[in-house]
View 1 (spheres, rainbow, N blue to C red):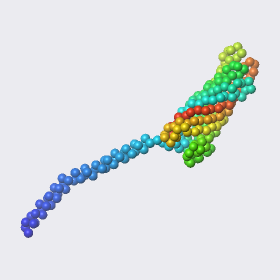
View 2 (cartoon, one colour; view 1 turned 120 degrees about the vertical axis):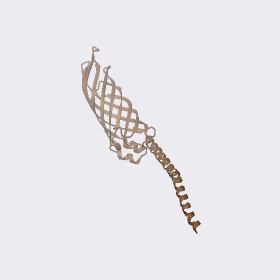
View 3 (cartoon, rainbow, N blue to C red; view 1 turned 135 degrees about the horizontal axis):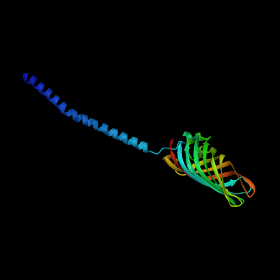
View 4 (cartoon, one colour; view 1 turned 30 degrees about the horizontal axis):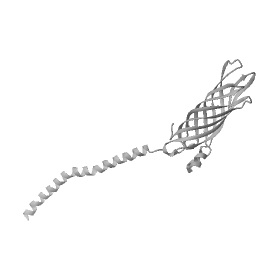
Length: 233
């Protein structure tokens, strides 16, 4: 009986030593999966951050477009024009704004008329909620927009003595258009096709061969745009 009583302290001491020496190993073994889980969580977060943003109606784009220019003056021949710039959309496709530099050229009585200008426009999308249904038709309907624009113009031409003349003025316009995706719009970045019409009036007026002419025209655009999905500002 005395031998058994003296053996119990030894057993207790042995358990205590075992617990002391195995506790760090147990903590290390338990902490290793936690560190691995943190690394995996960081990896998933990085992949989600790098994942392409689906198109939800907000975007920024750079565009280049051009087409025929039909001057309203009866003595003017049809010409051409083009512009390039940047476009930024509000959330959910409700509207967007566009800033562009444009150049146009047409002839009046066989004399060239050149128009340089900056154009600022606000585009309103009345069917923007259709984008929620997705698909090609929904992209077309949601992109339909009414355009209201304003900007400075510089008109350049020559008189009957070939003296170069120029005049600054202000232009305002109304128009509309639509856009269609060429590549997958849900990959974060995509190529789009745009088609637009603009009716433009200016304060510029000039005379060629004793005739008075005003700079007013119809402009048709067909172009390409590179879009990046998401809020730009």
